[in-house]
Image (cartoon, rainbow, N blue to C red; front, top):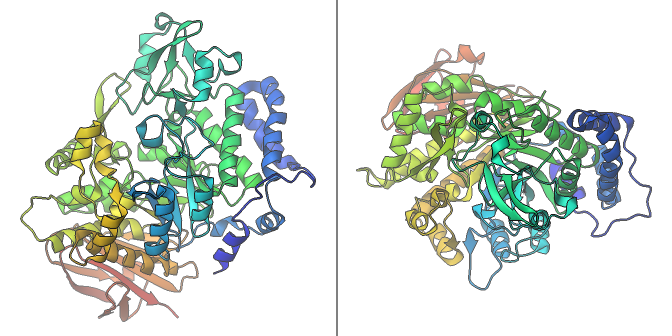
Length: 619
């Protein structure tokens, strides 16, 4: 309730700036932080020249803040930025549609009816005008796609939910005004992009060094007013990389992100920031300059919008991924836990949780103000980059082949040596976990599915669920063939009336999955031991089980979350002395059953894919 009051106080900005008040004056500490990063990126002379413009942008944003918001922020405690009640639903603005309705209005209606009390945050994937890549080739960063709705519809969603917006800062659409101005050779935009006049001056070895998530050429040729130019395109010929070596680009993106804050963003997902800084002679990934830009964005938000969090989307080996936390307090507040989905998938494919257990044992609280974003599925596929050096090459290949058997696909990336390797597995999570033509009951498949999802709910961090994951959607092979896009297998658009019927019919897979999964999340939201900062201990009991022990911040409440990853009944036995607990009776939050302990050893039989959340309150 206290957090809700805080959210109400910070929810809406003025529609127009109030310049009658004193302008924002950054404290010396903020000035020093920002200037030091600008100096590193651009040198002292350029940094000094662009700093006043950056401060002007901050002052304009500040003028939109209400007095209540300013007062509330003085008392804002980042330790409680995320709590156990935080769960995030990921969706496109138009995954649910109905003829004659604006998709964002439909989303608001369905969210209020089915999601309140389950998810308190909606991640609406890019809802701006775009030319390709399902929203990630943006033509106009500051307008809502009229096919979805308008900014009033976004504000309407904000009345009931916290919102996550995408900051697609790495690139723009080739059809954007910025790039069209470049093609027209407007001198104001000549340095907005990384451009070469000829490929002859670029050493081939430099191009081979680049690590990219695509197999297309990194340089795309365009005709401009002054002739042909080669332009850096990390992702596709339609997605033109922005040149952050130009401080004007950085300042413009800061202005856009602050516009998102003003429009209601509580979390900004920084898309593809792995490749933010383009530099020949390097891998182009995880460069220090990219980290510095993210830290500068953090400095800006901490100074004038401290309630807003940054979430970095960096599909990379786990050791590189977690570097985006910085020192735990100076970079992203949340990082996608990219290693989790493939490790959970592998555990259920093999009926062996050992590899997941060994890896998860190393997951600990990052800091008082940073945590993991735990997810299993998203609008993209299941990334496998994060499990390099965690899973062997043969294990990744075996996992990938299983996906093909389940009707999915494999997307590849270009390596630094010019070779290709799997980048992501394109499939819905339900189809990844369950083979459609398997000789087994639907009830068993639903139970297997829920068991897999439970793992992302109990680990330290904030859980997120993709809409199709909430519904238990199966592969949409038809759309893949129509659009010739492997990722569309997981992006089926559903008619509202059909979805409502499926949700209300107890015999459908949709009802069975969504009813039970939302019930699990509701129960999770009430438990103090699932606070993102609450300690956790992963317990290695047996290969058949994934077990995690969570302890509330006040150390009074303990939960032992147990998941059977096999299709067989398994005998669970654990000496509670290992967990420093001595209690004779435990309550299973999910079933309501009581579990009696003998000689401080807890033991019982667990059904196939069984899930137990055993709780005790220590007085």
